[in-house]
Image (cartoon, rainbow, N blue to C red; front, side):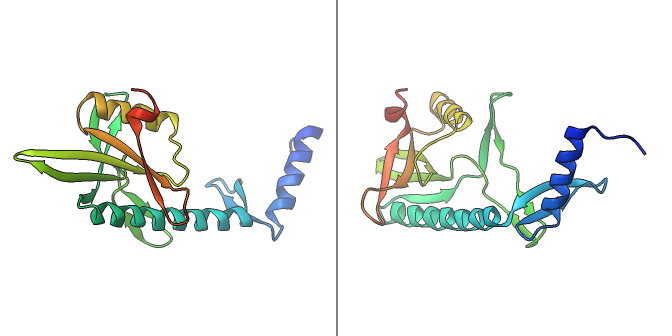
Length: 175
């Protein structure tokens, strides 16, 4: 048996203690070692956050449809390294045995008839706080520069309770 350094021994003992506690959920890797330690309270927060996000996304979709726009899930994504549009990968949840479709960026494509042979094609990304990550901003710039969408809206919670605010990406980030 190998001799373990004192610093490493303390870390190992701490991980073993957490693994056996009621407060943490332990994931084991293929080698039989502790993979991840997750706080059960954080697991619950994650579930509720995803559920709130899904409800808000549905609310935004209904709001756009009420405004006379045709809305559909966008199933594509941008590969910035290859500089091209790709099909978004489907995600499989092994616990609920569900395949998630429509994991593209942005969340929706919204189309509205303007006049003879002219349509407004807008990408809509739904964010409850309205803040995009760095890669999401780069993808939005790519969509606008390559004229995939005429505009990209960021849907976020409004000031009023239950309200939805749409922010134009180009105006907000000065394109």
